[in-house]
Amino acid sequence: MKVLRRVYLDNSATTPIDKEVLEAMMPYFCEDFGNASSIHFFGQRARAAVDRARHQVAELINAHPAEIVFTSGGTEANNLAIRGFVEANQQYGRHIITSQIEHPAVKEVCIDLESRGYEVTYLPVCSDGIIRLEDLKEAVRNDTILVTIMAANNEIGTIQPIEQIGNFITELRQRGQKIWFHTDAVQAVGKIPIDVEQIKCDLLSISAHKMYAPKGVGALYIRRSVRIRRQNIGGHQERERRGGTENVPGIVALGKACEIAKRDLPRSYFRLKSLRDKFESQLKERIPDIVFNGSRENRLPHISNITFCGALGEGLLINLDMHGIAVSTGSACSSGRVEPSPVLLALGRSETEARESLRFSFGKFNTEEDVDYVLEILPEAVKSLRHAASLYK
Ligand SMILES: *Cc1c(COP(=O)(O)O)cnc(C)c1O
Image 1 (cartoon, rainbow, N blue to C red):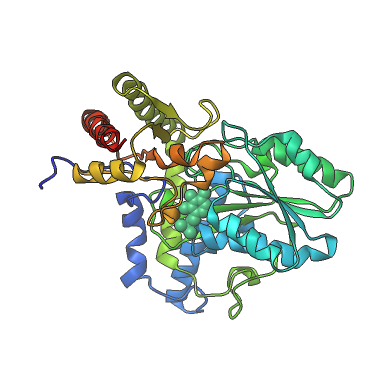
Image 2: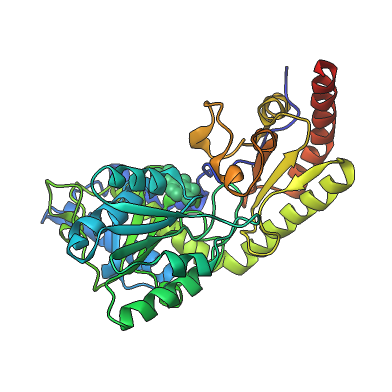
């Protein structure tokens, strides 16, 4: 079957590379290909490019360049932040607080640490997908050393009260407790303003491929006073915080993507929001019995997570794919498996409801025509799946 159109609405899984970003990174493959640790001309060119990128990343989140460590992506940034932090600070305690809706790159690190003598509290979320500050305050103990709560969720787009969390942790520290704050901001950076001084976080994770740069590169912000134990041993790169020859083209790309994100932020926010809002309001008119998941107010501009009562998400996804429309049943990491999304279950949705849900995530290359096309195809797809399901009853 030849599809009429290809519409990519899975930008929370990964994004296409911006042409401007691609152009910026190209010279670092064949011409300025040096090892940034080499002393000669080629090495200096690479070093200068990495330094420039470090400034660009720092600029976007209001950090100092020396506080940026490049990694192989969001997963490594989260591993380095959490594992590296607790290993360097275990003399202060062995208790960690996180939420029930973290990305696997945080959640599974926490689970692993539980088997290594750490204790972890997984805070619940309300039906709108947001943690309660009171729950956090009650969970803090004398031996709590780290709070790791994502800035915004990858499946439902809800934004956590990270500024209030940062203020709370700062107060505790001013009263003498040894406690720090990490946030996985992979989905939030570039979509909403993120300022590490305003959030008062100590560690913050970034991934390039969620913001129109290539896969396999990311960054971790580490506040100057914060000590971590490096996880990659075998090189002195990144000021001894992350061994391994730098991915120079990737780092250049991430830097450029951050520069563009900063330049375009208010405009791209409103553009994404208007595409998504149009999509949601029209959908509500055209399809009965749908439920939007997560807070309506505190959320990223580009994610819409919807339960289509009576229609299985997997079936819908395949039907949409046959029409050229790419969406997701939740986190990319859990597709392929049949388990319902743990995020939706944490919101209090039933297993059935979780299985009847899809995530639509918009990107800056989507157009009004894309939305119109999906609005044409989706109601029919839902109708036929619901019809098929009713025949089994
Ligand atoms: C994609 C994602 C990650 C993982 O980043 P990678 O660069 O793919 O390793 C971590 N956290 C969140 C919230 C994400 O969306």
